[in-house]
View 1 (cartoon, one colour):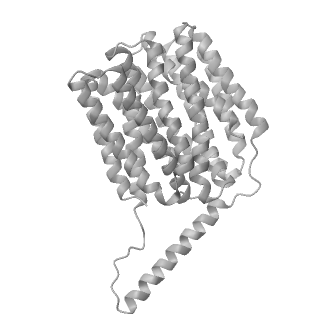
View 2 (cartoon, rainbow, N blue to C red):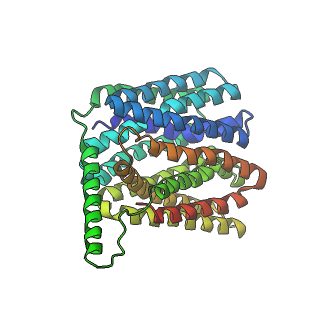
View 3 (cartoon, rainbow, N blue to C red):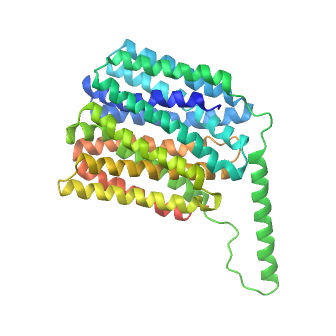
Length: 395
């Protein structure tokens, strides 16, 4: 199981994700501090994602960039224990995020090249399910560590150690593929199919038959726009969400972690359902259904807030369903992106996602702090709906 290292990596970041946001607030930071930190990190990660995707495909050394990501995260997480300055913490976080994304394109390519196109949905789902369990384990660790009031330094040292363990296991278990050809063959098949359909349409036209068939199915720009909009909505919601749970719902840190555990549990179920049910032909329909479902769920959450019954149970249930929907969506868009994005440009998938995340990472805290969450939720629902419309015109 070459993915074991990714499991330990996700355990570390599952713990770190919620903890660090609450930690920044506890030492005098604000929602805007979190927004600036997250959006800056994500904006700088956009060119980094394209760069890592280009160099790993150019050199064919995918393992190396995975190791760079894991080791650098381990070092920077340790450095976070040496300071309590908000500015230094933000700077270290930004640097870590740029190096962190180094493993994403390499991981995506490894799966695409190790398995045939018919197995991509299942293979990506198994990988994402495993790493989601790691993320879930990290969140459960957060419940335990916060309940027993472990120190900030201890928690960060645990995160650092887990990433170093990911680095060590990846050295042993990951090997670069001997031949890299699966995506090339797939693109040849797409060109051949396009040529055949073009000839068929031309022949029918010359024979005097009318045809309403289109040569190209869908619009690649619509697909990219859908990626940006979906990640924008997700980031706008989830960046300030821990503060909503802790402040507006008056929940303890351990309860905040518990709700995130339920969200992650929904994701685990979704990934393993996708591993057994998702099929290539069904991918586009799943994308449309999950984007619409996420929009509806946020509108429901807004209604619960307006009528003042936004209880912990209803909020937890909605977030669990959102995690389930995200898992199905993520598998389908990831498989489709590896099919249509050319070699050397596989990092574009993370670029488009990073662009939406960067905007949302600032937009979410800004709206929440200045206008309240009651205005944030309907905006998120509308953006999810726009993503749904955009994907309707995608390949």
